[in-house]
Structure formats: structure tokens, C-alpha cells
Image 1 (cartoon, rainbow, N blue to C red):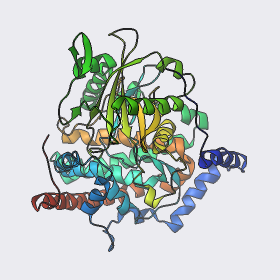
Image 2: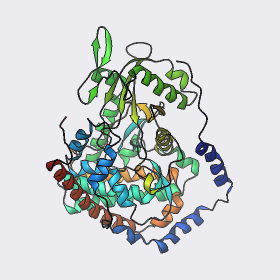
Image 3: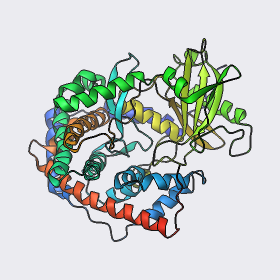
Image 4: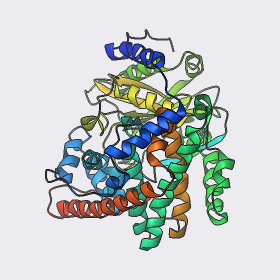
Length: 477
């Protein structure tokens, strides 16, 4: 594969280095001063203000928001998205980040900005292999990432803790413990990061031993199983699971409508032409040291694949490549990148390509991203690219296998990972000053979590009603 010409940077990309340089040259306050500045924000936004949630009088119909999103999705797959969201209130929450983004935009914020995930919930964490082949725990979904208020990620994560705890039959005590454990962990870890050097925070990881050290003995057993599973999720495992031997060549196994081999792009071009364009632009996005490695692989097959809950209907492809021989496979996931659900309520992304927005955000807050993380475009549609597995453990939380009493332990781990992400991209000292050492913020956000869990259940019921009335079409898989 020959290296394509790298296109010129957009004006926004050109302005970004000068903005960063200006920030670097600006006078930097001490940790003590930044903590004091954060504490002073309590005068304007008391921590107790975060407890309240009431639907805005002008709140849009949540089903209408989902229908607006469906306009840019593949129409034949949208009914599958609705079906997956109807499975439970937690499934609805997972698929309705756009709904909650609007609700959060009407809640108080301190004005402290981080690289927000934008779709924070307890199933958006997992373990993944670093370039050094060590297992690391962290956020594993960045489709909606954008600079935004730290409070929004924290509140969405806490609400998801209550929603999923209810789904598992937990009583109110366990539900509250889950939400408070998550916020308390976030608060305490953020204070630790505020006292560390900038490079120490940047290099910080939540590795296997760190995970096991904070869990109870019973939860530790679940964590070990999760990590063992991640180690098995290699490209060779995908080869056995997703391909068949056809005429002495491996080909991706079709499982309609979830995995389908197509011959033409949406614009009617041969699939090979579209694929070549995506990979050329993706190749240009790779760091120079990765390009020779990627160029050694050849493409064997490609198929479209349905993924996730909220992402269902977005264009997504799996590309099967091979290196030296049949024991040297590489599987890439090429997924459509749209505007973040936060964008209507935050500063617009400085990147013209939403795939680039996702990749830069992931590199900033995940800490040890995929070596083939990149972006591309074809026919006016943006994509981001990553390996399909490569020691990725998938969601660390499985509602079907988790006992209610273990949820608080897990939520504490999620709070830690979120704190690390925000500390890497924001000002941990300023956030720490605002959070304080008492449980005031724990109380407030736990109360918010219960209120928003109630709202999620109402919205889930509204989707069920829309399905019964025929407003939305639901299709099984």
C-alpha cells in the first residue's frame, strides 16, 4: 500500500497549536491557588444544587429526538435499535445519550471543562491491552466525546448505576450505595490526581493489580474472569469466531441482518472503491511509525456489522486483513462518526472530521489507545477505525451476570476511571477544590441519580407506547 498525500489541515486545526501555546505561556497558578478557585465556585453554584432534576417545561419529546437521530442511520436497521432499547430502562439509557444531553444542558455547572465522554454509563467501561500488552481498565466508548462540563459525565454515570441496580432487583439501600460509591471514588481519586505532577497523571493507569486491590474478594473473582476473557479476545480468536474456510480462503461469516457482506456502497459504487478511499484517508491519519506496519497487511474480506445499542443503524464495517500467513490476521472496525450529542450545548468541535474528534479525545483520556486508532472518510461520511478485539474485554459490566450486592464495588472502580480521564484532560486541582472532602457532592448527585432514573423509566415507557401505537417500528434480530 503506497502512502497517500496528507491533506492540508483545516483552519481550526491550524489555530489549535497557537491556542495551546497561548495557554502554555499564560501564567500558571499553583495547586493551592487552583484548589481555592474551585472552592470559591461553590458560592456561585452550591454543591447541593446538583441534587435537583425536573424536566424542563420545554423538554422535547424523547421519541422525537430518537427519530431525528434515525434520519442519518440506515433505515433497515433502525427497528433493531428500537428493539434493543426496549429491552429494559437500562438499555434505553444506553441508547438515549442525546436525550440525556439535552436534559443535562438545563442543569447547573461550574464552568470547569474536561474532555467529556458524552455517553457515560456503567457498561461503557472495560479492560483493554496496552501497546506493552498489559491490561488496563478504563472507558471504552468515545463516539460522543467533546470538551464539556465534568458534571455531565458524573451525573450520567451515577444515574446509570441506579437504573441498572433497579434492573437487577436491588433495594433502595444498594441503589444509593452504588451511586454514592461511584461519586465518592471520583472525588477521592480526583484529590489524589490534584496532588500529582502533570506527567505522573498523564502516565497513570488503572492496571490489573490496581483493579484487584480495591475490590472485595467476591468481586475480585468476577474481575479475574473479565481479565482472563480479555486475554483470549485476540485477532486469532476473532478468526475462529467470525470466519469460515471457503475455497481454501478465510471469509467473514454472514449472520443476517447483523453481519452482511455487501457489494456496493450507499452511493452505488463498488465496495472495493469505497473501501480503498476509506483506507487511504485512514492511512494518512496514522502516526508515521504505524504506517509501515499497517502496509504489510492485505485485505481478504469486508462485511457490514451491527454494533451496540445507541449505535445501531450507524454504518459500521469489519475489515479482515492478513499478514504473513493464516496465523497473522488483523480485524479492523470502521464505524461511522457523527456529531457528538453534546455539540448543541457545548462549543462546536474544532475538528472538521468527527472521526478525528473521536480519535483525539480517546488518545487524550484513555491513556493507552489502540495502535491502529485512526479516522477516514468516503462519500461524505466520516468514520473512525480501530482494531475489533486485540485484548479488548468488552463491557466490564454484564447485567445478566452481576449480583446486586457487587454493584457498589464496580461503581467505585468506574468512578476512579472517570476521575482519571477528567484529570488527564481538565484541571484536577480546580475540580477537587469544588468537590471538597465532605460527602456533600455525594449526597447531591445520588439524589439526582434517583430522580433521573425515574425519568429514564418514564422515557422507556414512552418508547414502548410508541411501539405499540405503530409510531416506531420494532424488529427482532
